[in-house]
Image (tube, rainbow, N blue to C red; front, side, top):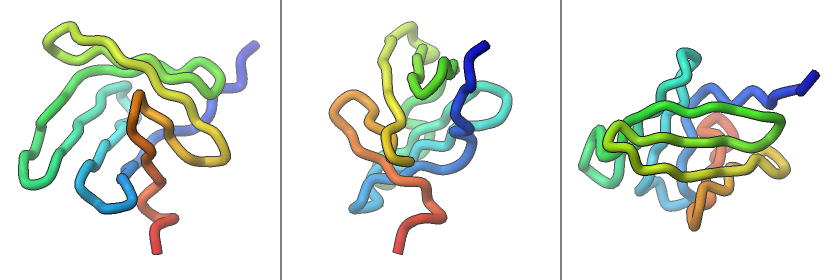
Length: 83
């Protein structure tokens, strides 16, 4: 049995430019700057690994390490942890 990490919520880059909402229904919505819904799709969680499939079919991956989301070349933090 896999203990999947709870990833639901808003994840944000340190500069706030990229905001990725991971929803409980397995969907995500990513905003970039003033561009809302820049990327949307679905995601799965296996342990601390995330698999993304964009609505256009593009795929990406991510990993949670020390409560930080490393998504391809991005580093995102849980919104409530930002100061």
